[in-house]
Image 1: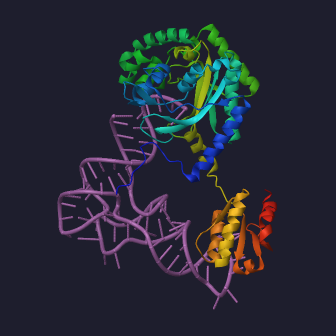
Image 2: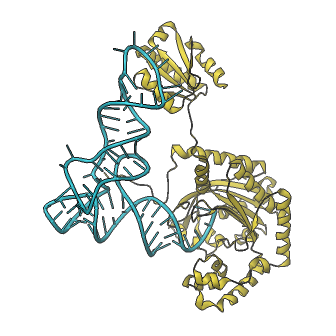
Image 3: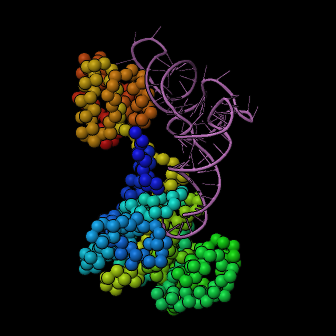
Amino acid sequence: MEPIQAVKGMNDILPDEIEWWRKVETVAREVLESFGYREIRTPVVEKTELFSRGIGESTDIVEKEMYTFPDGHNKWLTLRPEATASVVRSFIQNNLQANPLARKLYAIGPMFRRERPQKGRYRQFHQIDAEVFGVEDPMLDAEVMFMLRLFLERLGLTGVVLHVSSLGCKECRASYRDSLRSFLEAKVESLCPDCRRRLNVNPLRTFDCKVGGCKEAIQGAPILLDAICPACADHFQRLREHLKELGVEYMVDPRLVRGLDYYTRTTFEVITDRLGAQNAVGGGGRYDGLVKELGGPEVSGIGFAIGMERLILLLQQEQGLAARTPDLYVATIGEAARGKGFLLAQQLRSIGLETEIDYENASLKSRMRRADKLGAKLVVILGDDEVSRGEAQIRDMAEKTQESLPIASVAERVRTILGK
RNA sequence: GUGGGUGUAGCUCAAUUGGUUAGAGCACUGGGUUGUGGCCCCAGAGGCUGCCGGUUCAAGUCCGGUCACUCACCCCA
């Protein structure tokens, strides 16, 4: 029979790497909750319309990357490609605005985009996502970035840079788009086919183009950050002051363009140079019009997402794999001892000690080797000799010391040694 | 969607211009005289060389196809 393989771009997270995932999730929860965020879990599947309306019809995500399928009865469903739209939908549907404790939300889980996989980019990937509703003051924007940095620091991640910019509001972006378009139209013959198409759809994207001719053409183009309206400029200025107060290091990156249509004003990205082409570990920004666009009240919003695979890739590169080792290993010699050891192991586990035992008979030497490989801190040695005396031996593997004691007091003694 | 690279043991890699029984290290299992780990020594197990076809007396090696993985474009977390 042919073995069945996992779907392309959808990976198993194996036991050897799971410790990082748990650590990242734990630290994320601690940090987010200390800032007042509460967890929300939304379905992985939503109506397709939620994303086409929320993210934007002309975005790559909606145009060609979504897993969309019919659900019979003329309904189209989509595997969520990002978290914000779902959280916003839930915020509106459940009228969370009325709940003062539900202004700050976070979600952790898988997202799906049908892209060609490569390093740091997978078809199923996981995000830690945070959203805040109803606060317009840039103080919050700064706090969000402060929190993001704190989170990465807690994990010991180095070598990442925070890029910050402002996309302006709906109005000033529209007028900027027009002026950029007319600037580029004058040079249309030196643009690549992709960029000619972008000219109409979203001229801001030409800034991302790596083609030589486009890079030159874009030189001297008006910069969005210089063209934003006074209110947006003020917002950005105050954000920068708050970041300074908080001691958050960042660089202004006027070319930071986010690929989702809903972003307004503040945008930011955490960039690394150690993941090849996929350099964004996390990113986000304000989306002041989105809630209304999705049928809710006129409420502002800001949020960000962290790519867990990318983050963990970096952490593994820097800090290696974290291993989990048992507290103790029960090694028995002989039949009588085997039964006794089996019972003892269950008893030790019942009081919360991570205990390893083997189910087949083997030499003590091979048992000791195995205990060592597993990294057991203690080994309980139980031979027929000990059993006949009602005793057991406890060996401390690191100290190479060994003591005899009654079987009945093994559990208590192990606890004392391990301090548990 | 478009390019490039790579597929040999669980992992990392070998295998003269195509030429005998496809090797090594790590990992795994057992052993090195009574029941004690790491180092060392010995032994063992483990492969339809991704798959299909072609060229040839002969293919892991050359050619075509296919699948998988991977990197990049693109896009983004």
